[in-house]
Image (cartoon, rainbow, N blue to C red; front, side, top):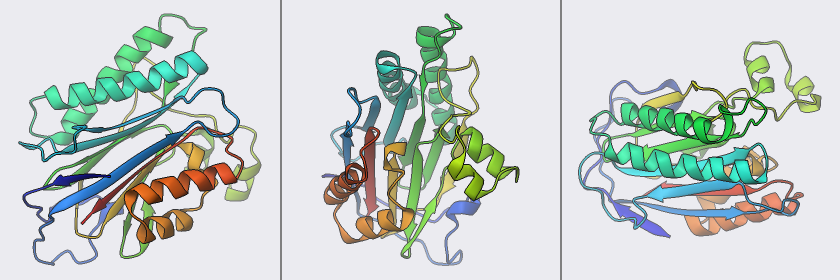
Length: 277
């Protein structure tokens, strides 16, 4: 389990609605460190693990400057070779582009990194051949001493857990989720829909990708984040919360992956658990 030490942490203005602090007028807080762990598993029915993930810098040491600690999960689509290649490319390109960008705005750096990854994956796997559609979901979380930021496309997910409540910070970019948000489909109808896992957005599918950015996420002690691919879909949000609150990040990852496999293991599953101490 990695530990990263931050020198300070301050309360932020302009907080995103889904990540609002319960006490906006509370005094500034400081945090000594974050602890995190990651685990990826092929599952029980797949022959190749098309998930990729990373935490950067990989040594987990304190980070000079304002770029913070970057966490990424990606779930490749479109076939064994192409999906695996696309997810690996996403992780590698995004971390490289993010840290070399000289902008002081981490949300701008993340967006540029995602756009570059989309361009290169598209060039490599998809856009040159209209019959070869391969790509990847991708969700990234940056934690700096001041605040957090998320960039996201696809149906991998990022949750926050605070005050014993779990909230999904990302929106699923699937055809069914889009219809539900527009009120065109009920939850019961969605469960039975034949296209419930078909993505509406992903990296590498189109020359231009629409990326969700969630900036200025306030950080506080005892808050946790969970990042996962859709292989964890059969584990409920409440179960995720209970495991993360009760266990260390390393043990939480192990238990969540085990729960996914115990319920069929029909897909690759990747989990990252990050706790602010």
